[in-house]
Length: 92
Image (cartoon, rainbow, N blue to C red; front, side):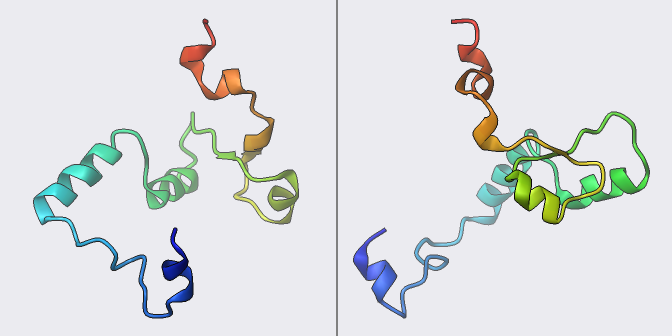
């Protein structure tokens, strides 16, 4: 981030890059869905009581205690060891 970006009131991070072509945007979001899920899909499955879903809240214990989705377990990112963050490194 440059000083201009933070001090120029007319600068926009949103408009800094041109919009993607529709076909490229579609490929991008379809590829993301191979690894991520939509919050609305999670909500629907939780409402339906779908078995086998573990919802992990990676915020601090304090933030989790203040407010969290019912049933979510708290596993703060800072407490996960480097080995567990990178499973491919666990065998080295």
